[in-house]
Amino acid sequence: MQLRDARFLVVDDHQPMREILKSLLFGLGARHVDEARDAAVAFDMLRISRYDVLLTDYDMAGETGVQLTSKVRHAAQNPNRRMAVIMVTGRAEGPVILSARDVGVDEYLIKPLTAASLCAKLDAVFGRRRPFIETETYIGPCRRRRTVDFDGPERRRDTASPAARTA
Image (cartoon, rainbow, N blue to C red; front, side, top):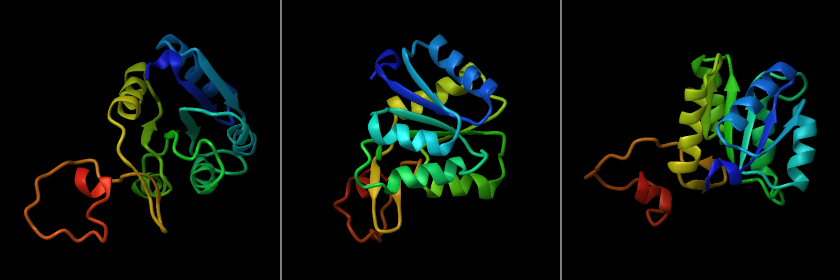
């Protein structure tokens, strides 16, 4: 998929940051970019319209970007359950990053961002997206980022799953 064909939703409670992200996306060739001022508005939009990528802030008034991602991933009838999610935040602490990863965020973009850093994350979700996993305890992209040859016994329960083969 090319950027010009993709549909983006930008969620941030600060209007200037929404404008920066929208400007960068348009500058990179995107033509369909919607915005929401908070997670509640975004979730309503996500229930009725299909998007390819959600760019959400971590810290927002009301629900956080992690809470929004969790709601989207767990909403069984949501048409955007499997869309790519890029968390955009100034928080680079390990526990914050892990909390985003554990709810199914695809990529983590740290502010201050640049066009190059946004391009790298978009390339990851469009060109190198990891397999999508749905288990009782996790819904989102496979958390394994490295592919290594392994000669030991397979410890995953379902060795026939795509994630087990690509790990």
